[in-house]
Image (tube, rainbow, N blue to C red; front, side, top):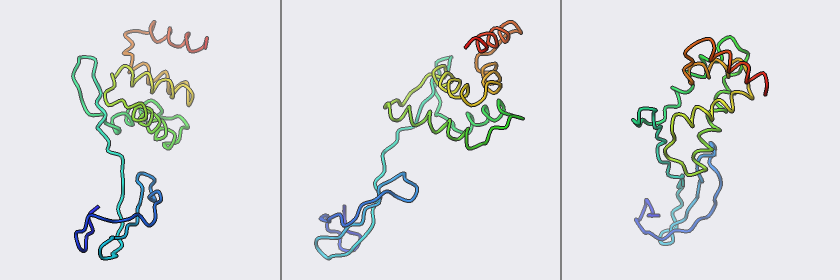
Length: 150
C-alpha cells in the first residue's frame, strides 16, 4: 500500500477491524519511511450476478425487480419489508458464498419460493402463480392441493 504522504510502498498494519457497515475490513497503517498513519479499506471484489432467462438471454440481477415481485405477492399480508430484504439478502449471500456468478431464472425463482413458503403460504401461492405462469384454474388448484399436503 503506497503512503499518501511520501509515496513509499512499505507500510505496516497498526490496527484491523470490520468497518461500521461490516462490508469491509478497516486497516490503520503506518508508513515505514515517514511514519504517517493512514486508513485503508479492504473489500471483497464482487462480480455481478447474471440471471439467465428462459429464452437464454442474460441480464444483470436486479434486486429491485425481485423486491417488486415480492411486494406484489405480499400485498395486504402482514409481512414486514425487512423480511423481504432478508429473503433477498439470503439468496444473494448463498449464491456469492457458493461462488455462483450466473443463475438460471428458474433456479432463482425456486430459491425465492422455498424461502417464501416459510414466511407466508398465501404470498407463496401468489408468487408461484406468476413465476410458474399458471395457465388456468386447474394449475392453480393443483398447487394449492400440493401445498396442503406438505
